[in-house]
Length: 89
Length: 432
Image (cartoon, rainbow over all chains, first blue to last red; front, side, top):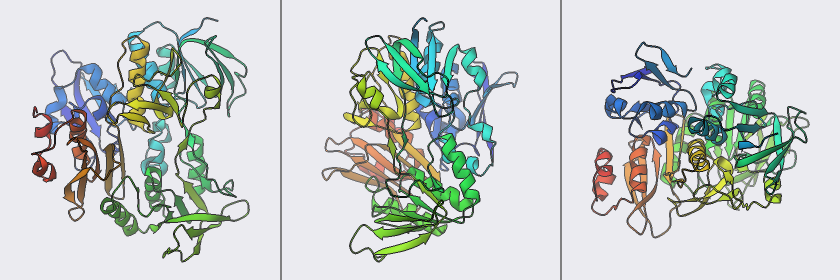
């Protein structure tokens, strides 16, 4: 599976979907350093949202965006409610 | 010309993150980044097979587009080096970098200065190390040179048993080369890893056909203009692999023996240095309004309780944030459990905290080499976890880091920590 998607329905948030490109993810774990409440590594050393997606609403938009921006391989993609890609631009 | 409110020397992870964080709060203050490279790119990507073997487009290495700098009103002064710092007049003198002659003699003034100058690959200290085919993996130009050399090589050696050597071995095997690793140490990642963990890594390398020469070093480089081979000799009298010395044919040598920082102009300005630029836990140097971050910073690590220098992407980014906030007046110390991760040969490897084991420490093993999933949790004499190593158990790392940071007391939890199926998260949320 090349990508893993997570729905986000946090009140007041502009980000409604988080996608991890597992082919790009190298397990550098910078996302975890920024937002440990959102991210963890799985058995294959790939970034996944905490507790099978339950962590998707944990962080505010700024922190979630920062965690995506911190990725050295741009493996985290964020989408708004209209399905438009917010990051990477 | 007006002084820059924030002048940043170095456009890598630390410098760019600092500029970005500054701009989020200070919308108008002038910011400049001085860099000897084109713009911010992913140094981490440089050593990854996907990038090397062209599986992902070259342009994916750029982490910021050119427009990002103008949109954020950040002056990006590229292709130049800072060569002089005058802390009295608060000014930095520039000279043309390797790719440009512009900027020489230009003086920039600052109110606050960040020195995030990073490091360079340590050069191989051996006669003939300037031959073609001897490559490093530190910056874009070096990697482009390496990519060209891989195409014309059949046999290669990797020198140094660190993260670079490990990742390069995999990349070269995927490119179809015959690979020999030459290491001074008795086993991989000595002394940071134990022999059991190291064997897991070495077995994976050897299974894929990488030949490993332990306790060995190159004594001579063969060839005229280009490397054609090396003479390797054992560093121990009883060296069984080389029986004194051995010749290895190779058209490529990848050198991963650490980083060095060019600190001459910084030292001359009166800034205290050691191997890096010395800083306190706020990443402040001994001179007011001058900060440091990233690979060059030798800072007081509050977790380890000593001065350390970490060449590490995540560390650079997180320090960039701390420095920016401190420059903005929101002064807080940098506090993070440092960690490294690497993947290759079907293994994921991670180390966090302090992994230097002292005799009085206790080690809790979690999993085993037999189940191909093995962590070592290092407990100090105060009954607290201070570090851990993970082979195919990176999923435990975030929780272990929390336990390190929270000074978790281990007594009574040994069986849980050693049970590979026990969910450690319940410990990190457990009040003590």
